[in-house]
Image (cartoon, rainbow, N blue to C red; front, side, top):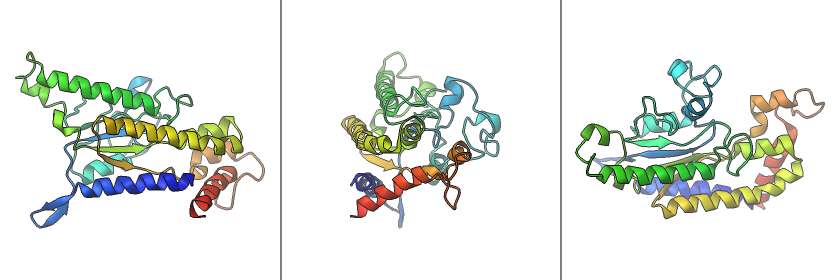
Length: 262
């Protein structure tokens, strides 16, 4: 049932995205004035690098080199999404140097989780609080009489009516499970999932109350196959399966999938 709930969230996000597509000159196109992204290192485009220190190589070396701030050797999924939707790459909210937020902002930070605690202080609730403040300040500045006629300034922030027509993307949840596996038992991780999903649902509702209507939600993948987890469990006898993935983590995911089908 838990995995089914997550899958329903994903399906609803697809419905929301597709419903905003329309026919333009005989072809179906999806167009959004802005994208606002929330998540962890899977979609962090420079926040953790700006907040603390430059991320270690490869740091997007095949993309923007040392300026990338990405925990990979090239582009992230969010980069491919922006390219496909003809929107500029998203600037990290925490990185003021060279940033432009005209077509959205990225609140994702490496190590973040849905629940507070864990590897990073920038949990999803804090990211959404940052977004709400960003939205409020953007609206105030856009209509402020002292800056209202400064076109160069206004070109760097979203239009107030862009927020209700923007695409809101999420790639988070992996660190909730990873931190649990590292510091608690498999059973405790299993028992924590309803609370994780409940908090995630409440935070999505908070964004909905702010006017967000279009959501794209990534599901959590097979975390037991991540190289980091392989290195952590490699020395433990019998903890890796035939594919080199961590058995306890893969077993939990398989049980969730099986329960969703029953």
